[in-house]
Amino acid sequence: MEYLQEFIKYYHITEEELISELKEHAYSTILKKGEYAIKEDEYITLLKIVVKGRIRVYQQYEDKEILVYYLRAMETCILSLSACFEHCKSNVNAVAEENTVLLNIPVRFVKEWSFNYRSWHDFTINTFRESLTIMSFNYSKLAFEPLKNRLLDYIIQESSDSTLYLSHSQLAKELGTTREVISRILKKLEQEKKLVLGQKTIKVLI
Figure 1 (cartoon, rainbow, N blue to C red):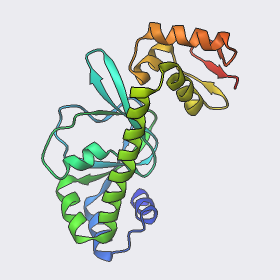
Figure 2 (tube, rainbow, N blue to C red; figure 1 turned 180 degrees about the horizontal axis):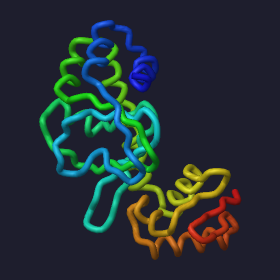
Figure 3 (spheres, rainbow, N blue to C red; figure 1 turned 180 degrees about the vertical axis):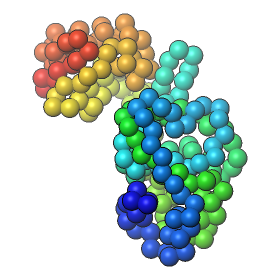
Figure 4 (cartoon, helix red, strand yellow; figure 1 turned 90 degrees about the vertical axis):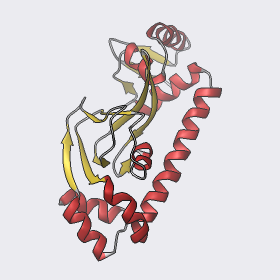
């Protein structure tokens, strides 16, 4: 109930009937790090909203993974949300990057509430708009920005106290390339004195 109240407050849900329905049908679950919220080719039966934690959404192409985006607190996957309006399978995987709390809503209510309640309609439209903006930005970077720049941007964005704790193989998965390519670019960035490489650590100097 605590997590549901956080969601209601965050999205300014005021309709008493909708709040009552959420209390009746929504429930929370906890995903441990490494567990999947969604798997590719599985039918979507629940809309899963991240209340706390972080989810990595990606697509698998043979032996490569392409990062779509991350889901953080009070966010849900646009691809799952769209599947709620038409019975279909997921085309992405979503895995917990850390222990994560999810708010789960059966898909049969998602479409109905969008027509019946203004605040739920706003939640749906805003999720589509914001997620499409992020996806468009990410794919523009993938198509037009050199891998060296994308790698450096990713390291800076994801580092904590200027340090990123990831292996070269993990970085390759995040950016949809090979470990050898990542290692070569990291060496070049280190030579340019932008990074210091350690054992599964990268220190940002800029």
